[in-house]
Image (cartoon, rainbow, N blue to C red):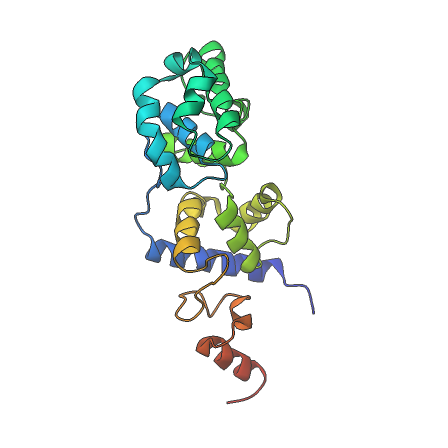
Length: 234
């Protein structure tokens, strides 16, 4: 099979973004946060855990330690007790304290506003930093590639890279900068609502006509029609 031209991939990526914008024009973060600091902690806690689970533990967490100064002085064991219902809670409790301490000691108690500085914080990688910059400061420096975004980008054949970090670079190359901002939230919603991990709902999918993977879905009428057309049938 011939290699697909980058131009074709770019056209598909742009069209996907436009359709996502129509499907989810006012999408918001599912995480409950009020300040850049609480945003950092929420996203840090959300790794390999659902947003719903995080939202259940953060009211008590932020009631007891509402800012970096307070959390920097916390005992990780006490934080662990509050967040023990989420995955990797012990490690995350340590990261909460260490990140808070660095925010206080190196950034004057204010969450930094650059990718380089944010990724210095314990427990904060590029994905987390992208989300914080975007949601807390309105700064678009990349695309946060989580499990949903990585799965969709792969299914849509916008990348064949083995890791989310590498996949992000492909997406940044294909998608114009002015479309980066809402990609993470819109694709997450689409990945939960339609293109799920185990049973993607290809029938009726608004992207079925441009999705390379949809044609493999058995019983998809549009996919079958496209296959017949490409084979010269009626």
